[in-house]
Length: 360
Image (cartoon, rainbow, N blue to C red; front, side, top):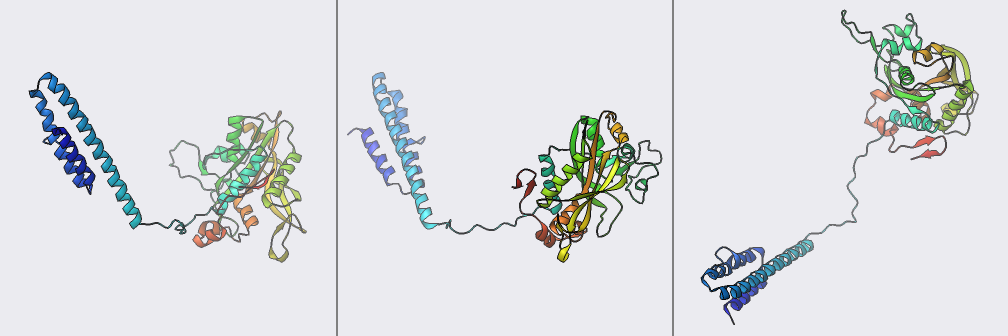
């Protein structure tokens, strides 16, 4: 047996007998470290003849590779054995129920805003948005609201503070989302079909009014649009939103500066047993205002009133949320605690649509 055979047998036996990675590292250093036996043998090659160097060098390289392969295999075996031992000593019961997480809920206003958007989207209405701080022109002038109108007084509207020398026009917290209609007409022209949901602000506060609330306004402009189209749209919306097979709407003549003619819209209902039921009974409930867009408003939006006409409507999102889900006080939307939100909140969105009933 040659010297290299002796070294091979010695280290392979040591590797096989190694009980842990520390022992394995000691063997690696003894064999292949800078001062290891095989490394020292490699250094002796320089003192040999070319023929001896070729033969011995090849044998040493084979030995080095075998020792290295045996070390790696043993290291993997030790790691597997350690993992097996750990798995036997540690266990996890995957059949146990998971730790519960507190689930948030969707605010009723957000839920209803999404419901309304989905319904009108099915009827081809796009969503338009605009700034909540508006110029006096967009909020009033472009909508044919006269300078002496009560809404333009400080007791009704939040006006932004201005220095006396500030040359900019007055700005307000928008009192309705109607300014979005002007911006949409200016940006897209006619024909157009949009809804404008969002926050609005008025200086009012009681059981049915709040200084900040939510509206959605609709606008449809075309060459042949009429009040009949308006009535159909509102009927389809009410049937779908309130989830009833039929509704009866009543249009009452009214006055809004931005529509002509204008109409308040009532819906047939009953209050039997103190519970509101839409679509039946002998009572009427006012739910929104509407009308044909005033020619001056069309002109302010950059649309020729001699060529186009259309309808507009506006409804309070907080109000219809109260009606649909039986919420008694508008102030609860803003002054409520987590118990109220848990009671009236929604775990998932159930969006009624015109064509498919409820969809998730």
